[in-house]
Length: 197
Image (cartoon, rainbow, N blue to C red):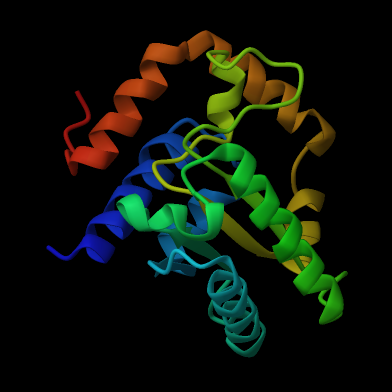
């Protein structure tokens, strides 16, 4: 299996077992069943190239109605990640990438059409301790920029009772599951183990 294929497989496992399996996103199951989620693995360590590829993926999503949403996954490249002092494995550097990505999308007038959700192996919400289970609602096997169609998101939210309570419900559920649950799930994803036990 190639490195890119492994990264995609690990991400699919995480989506199916954690995001959908634990219902952290009440809209994701429909898209998984419909096979309308695009998985794009990017292996360049350069931030400018990552941004250019992200813009290309945004254009592809807009041009392809069968793609409901796209997971833009950045694969780690070991020591080469530290080129030009940028390391995608660092959550702080990832936040810089997110800023650059949002700026690039604003320049192309994607506001109101596309938006980003973000995930990272070391995701940490402001005010949360690093080992808080709440952080695992946004922790993934690899760094991800999730491209969402705003129209589809708005339509899905209208079908959900009390959508404003989703974040609080997710945090409460994450605490109920506990940190160890998420650590095991992420480890299984990285190891390519699809055993649910």
